Amino acid sequence: MGIVNVTPDSFSDGGKFLDVDAAVAHALELFSQGAEILDIGGESTRPGAEPVSEVEELRRVIPVIKKLAATLKIPLSIDTMKPAVAQAALAAGASIVNDVAANRSDDAMWKIVAESGAGYVCMHAQGSPQTMQKNPAYKNIVDEVAAFFLERLENLKAMGVKAEQIAFDPGIGFGKSLEHNLSLLAGLGSFAKLGRPLLLGVSRKSFIGKFLGAETNQRLPASLACATLAVADGVQIIRTHDVAETVQAIRMAEAILSRKNNA
Image (cartoon, rainbow, N blue to C red; front, top):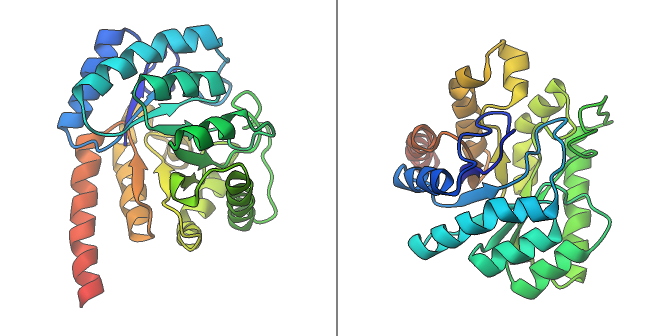
């Protein structure tokens, strides 16, 4: 899953692709590098990010989605917390809702997913982007995230969302400390037992910088290490800024794993 940030303030590439044509060109480049899904977002969800209005988010993402839907045959994902933006994006050609606010209490987003039949990425987070890194706390993070997924699965099914529409994302960096993130990455195999696809987003994230002292543009090797280990633990979707490098790393890991499993 290639990341297309149509934002001025995303932590890694904010402002680079705010223009519609630049965002489309970037998306097409990611596709040429091997992206099998494109995730388009118009609101930064980095820690402390300020929310944007519904009107502004729509202005940023809808033209990009329309152009890509008319050009490409791969799935397009809308990365949004707003039900109205998700609905408009699905109408424009997206087929997946990537919901970083799946810890929501209202059901408007889920009704849209149920009615549309769209894919739904249910991501775990503690708090909101404005509050999530202010002393996050868990007793056992792997167990608590797994319990959240199971509870959401039942809620979503009760709303009319079919199990086959749902993928889970443990939400690396969303209301988690460095140790929480490492524990989640070590426990990914337990989530695979839930029977739904897993999505992982670790690309260039700040926990890598905290652990290794690496700046944002120096975090590719660690991102690839996390991605390949995640694939070995059963993760099916890797969300990344660096598509070409990630595809190469994963294909090699898959080749080795297939022979290991057949040995």
